[in-house]
Image (cartoon, rainbow, N blue to C red; front, side, top):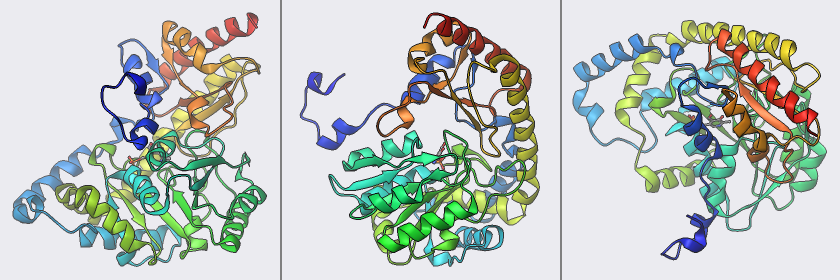
Length: 398
Ligand SMILES: Cc1ncc(COP(=O)(O)O)c(C=O)c1O
């Protein structure tokens, strides 16, 4: 229903809310027989089912009353401590558990960051393109979203420096970005932090894919370079399971109390049962053995998609091999519109996500995103071959 058809007067923020185009696409692609390279879902075969089952049993046996009671808004203390020490040891950050706020996935972190930092018409800076779910999370706070000129290493530091005065924050994805798969070099990280620090511009750093590297680990997070100015978002969705809805914010002490108050107002706290289960899983060191198995699996699937792309799409599209994360980002010949081609692709038996909704402004319509993690290697080839047929026909018709 469009706003004008709605029987009630909606808040301005509600008018700004949009259905997720990706979710709409996923509905179509759940039809059996479609090879969907559209989803951003982790492979369900990676979920540590037995470890979660054992941990659930232990939590219910050892602390059933606490696990089912209301709990602290900050999060379960041992889990906050685990997060802090993990970030210190694995990512070279300086973090105290008192800075950790457990959230309902990093998606809630995006909402809370905007709730605390954005007024109507505030300027918010994002990459080109950027994570669609962040644009959705920010929209109800009515910001003016400005897309920063970006290349394969992330936003250009000079673009950030020029746009920073008066902006409320810049939202950055340094590791294996969704949708492009790009990773920032160490030099680019330093230059961006220097520009932000000089302007007093807070950075919101979103890092759900940082542990999914396939060749070498990425450089340290922006938060390691500037702990006082970076609000860091982490997630258990890609290394354990997204259905647990567990993530965290590491906030500079100056911002933490307001984020906590915003979290309290939103939902009191994140499900303590899930937090205790996940802590039980983590405290026995599961991630050290589990994450390498995810990496090995996804790397093989990345390689399978690369082979399929080279076989079927050479000359029809351009891409860079992602060194981590879950996605290939394709640029089609100018004049092709990926959104318009999607129905034909579904007709041909495959689905992708058009690039358009990932752009805050001036979308490149000739772009699309393919996930290599959800579908097994042999079906990846089938999907890519079907896409090639669609693109070949569309190019011939240009
Ligand atoms: C870049 C990015 N940020 C945040 C999220 C949200 O993740 P979650 O709320 O499951 O932690 C996603 C999910 O795919 C993502 O790709």
